[in-house]
Structures are given as C-alpha cells and as structure tokens.
Image (cartoon, rainbow, N blue to C red; front, side, top):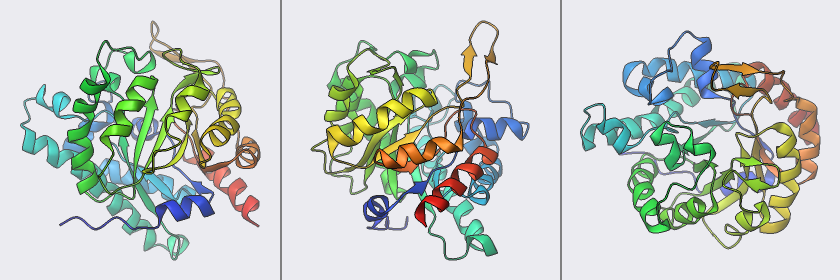
Length: 312
C-alpha cells in the first residue's frame, strides 16, 4: 500500500519558502539519455528508472527540497500508443512517485540530508503535452472543460493513490484547462499547486493572467498558484499578481531564459535565470521557488543558497 501523504505540506508551504528542483529533461539529457521520444522523460520510467532516481538525487544534493516527478508527459493514452495496457500504464504513473520517494530516502541518508524534510510533487502536465505537438504552449485544444476533466481525472487518481505530498498541475496554457484540473482534483485528498505557462500578462492561450489566477482563489485543494516554464522576466511580473489575486502563496519556477528554435531544434540566446531574482519573488509572496527547462543543479544550488540566506 502507498504511504499516506503527510498532512502538513500546506503548512510547510505557508511557513516556507521551499526550494523546488530544476528541469528533469535537461538533467537526464546531460546524463546521456535520448529524450527525442514522444513520451519524453516518461519513457525512462520503464526503460531506465534508476536514471530518474539519479536525476532527482542530483537536485536534492543541490539543495532542492521538493522533487517533481517524471510524469509530466505520462498518460494512459500515450502509453497505449506504445502498446501498454491500462494496468501497466497505471503502474508506470505510480512508479514516478515511487522513484522520487526512493531518491528522497537515499538523500536523507547522507549527512547533508539528515533532518531536512524532502517532499514529492507528482507532475501533471497539460493535455497538449500528451499530443507532443507543441500545443501545450498554445492551449485551445478544441475540447470542452468536461472533456478535459475526463482526460485528467484518471491519471490524477492513480498519482494521488501513489502517495505524493502534492500534485503539481503545471505548465497549464489555458484557463479552460485550469478549470478542468481544479474540478478533477476535488476529493482526491492530496493538496495541489496550479502553475500556468505564460507570455507577458496572459496565459499562452491569451487569457488575462489575473482572471486565470482567480479561478484557484476558492479552491481549497490548491495550496499555491503561479507560473512555470516561462521566461524569468515573465515570472518576475506574475508572482505578485498571483499572490494578490488568490490570497494564496505563489509558486514560481521559470525556464533558463533561452528560447527554443523549433526549426533548428536548438536553444538560442543566453540564460537570464539568476539566483538573485529569488529575493524579489519571496518579497512578492512566493513560497515555492525553483526552475524548469534548462535550469540544472548548479542553478538550483545557487537559488537554494539565496533562500537559506533569506530565512536567516
């Protein structure tokens, strides 16, 4: 039986700040794993689970306190396209939580991990991530809120049953999908955070960000609201808005600041993710801070050091 999720994650967030990890995909790629598959990092849940544990451990060693599981692109539909039945797919979803727990257990055995609470966030990516066609950055899938809820609820149930501390409803591009996710998490008994992928002051689908954040204001399951998988500059602007509109702690974990050139299949520009942004995020109401794509252990280490200084 899975462990019962600790009842105090919401309290830990409120008392925070807590340090999230960085990008799972860039850490796996740095270790030599091919992620060109449509399942992305979720493929390694079956093919190389120890690599997933190692990636989580690298972030814990860097000072992260919350590991986000490798389930972002995992779904029953995606695994079915690989010939896996529903039971096998459910097992791999649950394994994502188990691997993060194993990494936390091993990290806690090290001197630097002793006495440090380590948490597991089960990643729930948007519907577009399963399509693997870039629509996760556009939203507007042509599905109703009810259809999106029906897609998300089964995998949320499996992930919740695996015993994470929190569900990470992340990289959400569209307020309609946020509505569906907020319905789908009801009654699961696990807290959640909701984070949008944004461009400027709007969701990727073009809705005003204040309106999108407001959807979570009355959701008791949601312990933090904010942004991820966006530029650090957009994150700077969004944190105070999320905290003000919802009255909840903010979560923020942007990308490196480089931009992806789809034609060349390469990253362009230089990184703008800097640990000295953390002070501004915390002052604006952030209580969960970390990084997303192209943010690795070295950046998380610097960020964790800033958080530690801010706690003194």
